[in-house]
Image (cartoon, rainbow, N blue to C red; front, side, top):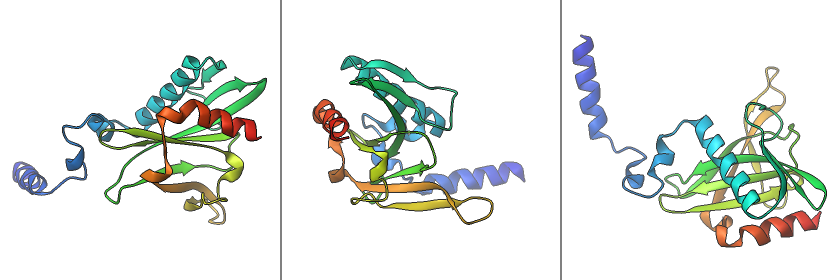
Length: 177
């Protein structure tokens, strides 16, 4: 019976259009196939390497030290602590950045939006989350059911920033504070 079940399931699966069909053969197809933790590590490494490339000081990726923030660096003597999130473009052409925690010790949020052939980003101070058009939706509640433990921030591609403007965007936001 196991063999029959596997054959039927395989046939039925082949008949289904996967949500990844639009990504097949594209530059960033692999993003759809890597594990969630690996996506986080990939995004942390990208941000850290970009910051090093731009000569920011004390750039550190905090692998294995989960719970507070992912990447830190110094900007004009100020310690910046960044939470990173990656979202691939969904079938509605939106990005859902999941698992954003307000109770963590980060100062800024870096969101990497991946389309089949492009990457864009969003960088914003933590204090803007839930305000200024950055509405977040609770994903889950704590064990008592009274406090959200994670939030989702949904953005359209037009809301994200092209990497040509990475340095100026980061510095503008950091200088505002």
